[in-house]
Image (cartoon, rainbow, N blue to C red; front, top):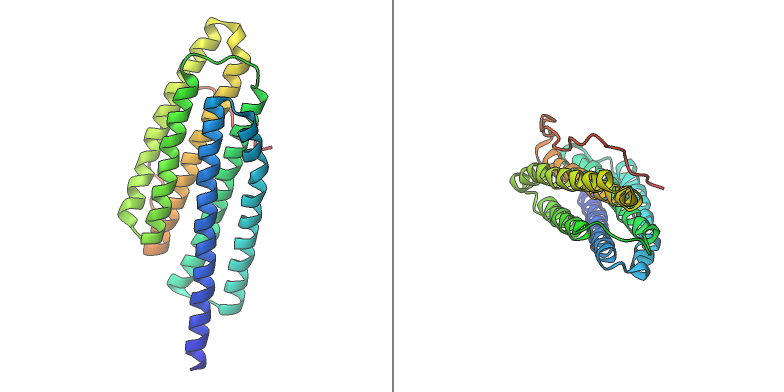
Amino acid sequence: MNEKHIVSSFDRDLEGIQAAVMKMGGLVEIALTGAATALKTRDIELAEKIRSGDRVIDTMDQTIKIDAAKLIALRGPTAGDLRTVLSVMEISSHLERCGDYAKNIAKRTIAMSGNGEINETLSGLHRMARFVEAMIKDALDAYVQRDVVKAAEIIERDAEADQIYNTLFRSLLTHMMEDHRNIAVGMHLHFIAKNIERVGDHVTGIAEQTIYMVTGEMPGDDRPKEDQTSLSLEPSDE
C-alpha cells in the first residue's frame, strides 16, 4: 500500500511538472506571435509588453527545474520515468531560450522605431515567424502524444526554416549593398531573422527530447544545417 502511495505521488508530481511545461510552451507561442505582430505593425506598445513579459517565462523555467530536481532527489525515478524528468528539464531550457529570442525581436522592433523598412522584408519575417510558431505547437503536441514519427518530421522541417532565413538574408544583404542608408535597419532585420531561425533550432531540440524520452536514444546528428550565410553573427541575448 505504501509503495502504491509513493508511485501515485510520483505520477502526480510528474504530471504537475509536465503541465507547467505545456503552460510555459503556450506563453512562448504567445510571445513569438506577439513579437512578430509588433514587428509587422510597428506596434511599440505590444513590443514593450512582450519584452517585459519574458520575466514570467524565465521564472517558470527556474521553477520547473527546481521541481524536477526535487522529484529526482526524493523519488529516485528509474529508466523511462527518469528520461521523462530529464526531458522535461531540457524542454524547459529550450522554451526559455525561445522566449529570449521573442524578447530580442521585440527589443529590435523598439530600436527600429521611426526608421523605414526594406521592401517586403517585414512581411517575409512575419511569415517565417508563423512557420516556426507552427513548429513549436507541433513539437509540443508530439511530446504530449509521445509521437516519435511526428517529432522526426519536425526535425526535418527545420531545414525549411533555414532556407527561409537564407533567402531573407540574401535579400537584406543586396539592399544594404545597393544603398548604404539601408545598413542600419538592415542589420536590425538580419538579427531578427537570425533570432527566428534560432527558435527553429531549439524547437528541433524539443523534438529530439521527445524521441529520447520514448526510445531512450537521441536521434543522430547527421542532418546538415541549411543556414549557409556568410554573415552568421549570433544575435545578442541581452
